[in-house]
Length: 248
Image 1: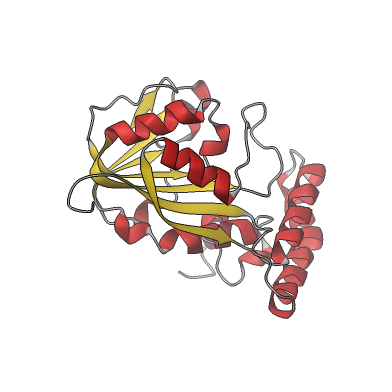
Image 2: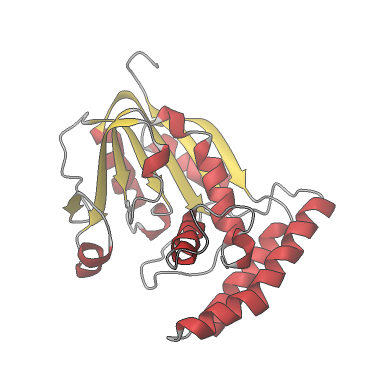
């Protein structure tokens, strides 16, 4: 891309929202969260082959990374999701509108904390997976309340594994993202973001560059200098599998 193109900065800035690069710390208040989440998910994206269901797909930020032969984005049916998101199918928030064994894999990223009936939700995912199919699940651990009032839970790594196993899914791998001092700087920026956010785009840009970018930079340095702490982290990422099939 040519930096002289007037749309270059806008496109670059938009890409930094979910795919922050080396300079993303300048413009993304959630730099550590989004960069850590993408890095963690990319380890497991190669498992998402065949027919893939993206539950709570939003704008489908990870579609380009997933080697699916068939990719279906699903969202709960509300005026906001209809207007703002890129779903292929909408549903009532309870029953997934697919027959049993419809998908080889399910992606569910940063959605599970918004589910009021987690056991029922996981049973539905289990139902639409084929035997041997996999679920790639990402859930916040240390994060502020968001999308209120539809923010219902936080899960430790142990609690999340118990939920999945109770639903008949076998946990194969668990990962924790940003399990070091950067988590503190990310939480500080989440705080600064909420108290400085306005309707004025220029003021928001100024707050990001003047307040949050320096915090990101300090976090980068801190992450280099200080030891990791596996008990305090931003997100859980889990690869789980339905029993049966050739992968059993």
